Image 1 (cartoon, rainbow, N blue to C red):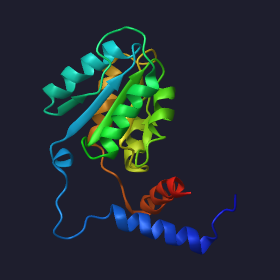
Image 2: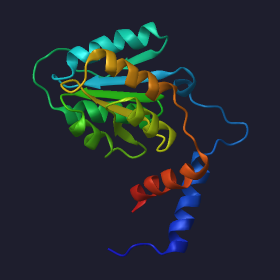
Image 3: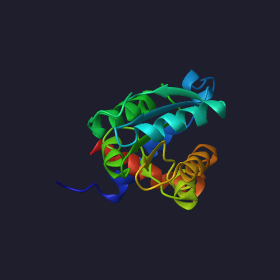
Length: 180
């Protein structure tokens, strides 16, 4: 495989940046303005997902529950993909996936075009994921975090804005990797 030249990479970045900038006269999809959060989990994250759903609803968010709906063993990639697709298709503004460690769901979600999933484990990682990387899906490890910390991470992830500026071309380069 041949890597693109600097000029080709620059052209790709410019195209991606152009697609991510709002155009005059266009409005955001209803999901983007309604603060819909897609939420999913495997069996290991089910209990935390249920608690986070109540927490999000109490905070005024609309929750799109992507399952699972009990503690029977299931495969985390299925639920990570469901959340990621909801975000990529504009049905949800942000996504959250909970599994035992958060790692596998992050890997699976990142396979969906348009998704930038981040495994966050504290306030700083959640802030950085949003501010520097414009992450749109959060993954959490229910076996690694208590519920109070998970709620703090979730709050940070949902309220931190993308910094843009010097970070925008870097995010565009991440997104350009999907086009190779």
